[in-house]
Length: 148
Image 1: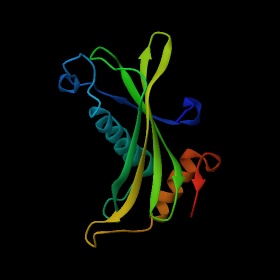
Image 2: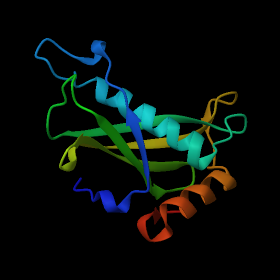
Image 3: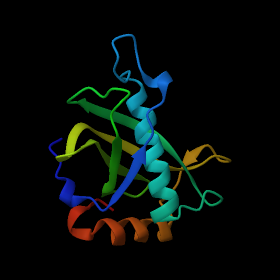
Image 4: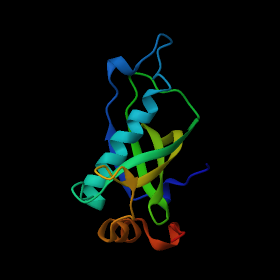
């Protein structure tokens, strides 16, 4: 997953909590999924305006590439964008960066396969039209693989 930050518009700061740090002094590998979740949730709320009363979202798969460790003193942020849209599923990429005096350094990348979901019926549903349109318009059609 070789990612270019220039392909991303959305970025959100991620707080590092003391409880995120393991015995070796860096962020525990399992915590990265929480960082991705924070970033995705902010993206869906601030950019996509996902209507949770109409459809929910569940995760079908997560992939992480750990490139460099993160420590308690680091300042980090996460870039997020939709990279593929199907009928009921869509892929979201994450690029976690360390902010330094020399700029941003990519420390981790990841992808989650998200599924539009009806919790009352316990089944996947088509991605709502407004949310689909928002993802495509914001993250640019040229950068999204539309498999629907």
